[in-house]
Length: 121
Image (cartoon, rainbow, N blue to C red; front, side):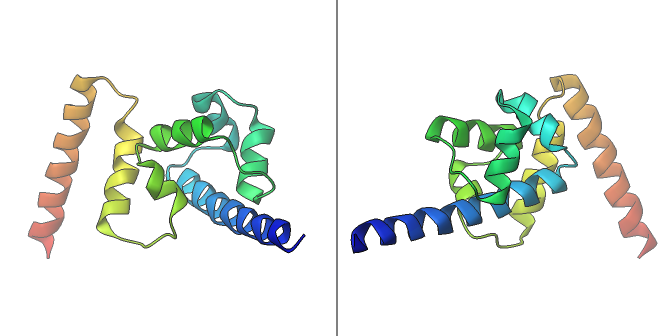
């Protein structure tokens, strides 16, 4: 019985952490739960349950979530640490559905915007 409680506590902690991460990344990406659900092939209620920590999805669903965000599976599971890397993943998630030509176009605009902002400093 004690072993079962510990396992449930670990699953609960994992579910809560995973839910926070999925919710945080989804909101940074400016997607609704419905948009994420569509991208990973599940019902919006499934995304809601994951974000609330009510359920821990299967490994294949976790992989689909990470792929949709343009992230590694470990990034979705770990404690969040704000960094430049997380901003890069966010940009990657925004441009990943674009064609190669559109990706180059968007990145060139971003580069020009950054240069413009640096000149103003």
